[in-house]
Length: 269
Image 1: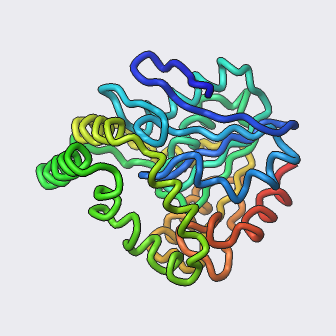
Image 2 (image 1 turned 60 degrees about the horizontal axis):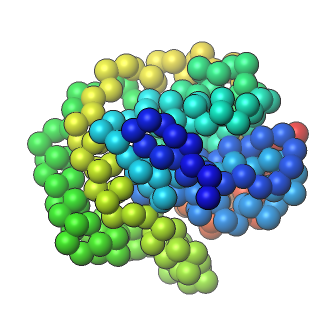
């Protein structure tokens, strides 16, 4: 199992396939297993790199946790593998992570893809008291009752982003459970602790217009909470294209894998 040494964290990644590099980054509370329905199609055409971002899946977490820190981790991995001419995919939380990497490495990142993405941070101070209280509650559950109880508490089985998907497609439950149970409770707890103490003073949102790479933005039509963010990203990035997939919500790549895979491969090389 390969790990990248990020000094204060060990970042797990997997490589498969041959061709130009395609890096897949996951969303919050997820990990590299979320791309399982993409791997057979993508690894037949690309050198596929999936990453467990710090604190998630099999990757540990140090005292730092933020979009910028996760971007530094992935940039370090890219350099260590000497990857070039890369397409990078950011899903939800990691959309802004991929965006930071594209800004910092225009000589290596040639294509950028946002999927169900949130907007980059407009700048914030450390977490407010109510967010810290919620993090403390989650940490206590992780330490005393484990990942499964934490998943129930946080809505990762019944919350609005997954409820419709699992009710309409019960065959996805096994995959979803495998994603959730890949997490390490100690790593998640450390991530939550570090996240609560993190500030992000930079207004990254203002820098969307600086993206020079051709950019594909994919969103599910039923993803009401995040669809506006995708449209905003499309308006801000000059050389960008928005693709909306019918019948899909937030987990568009899992809910509609064939349509998602086709959209990506037709747009890429």
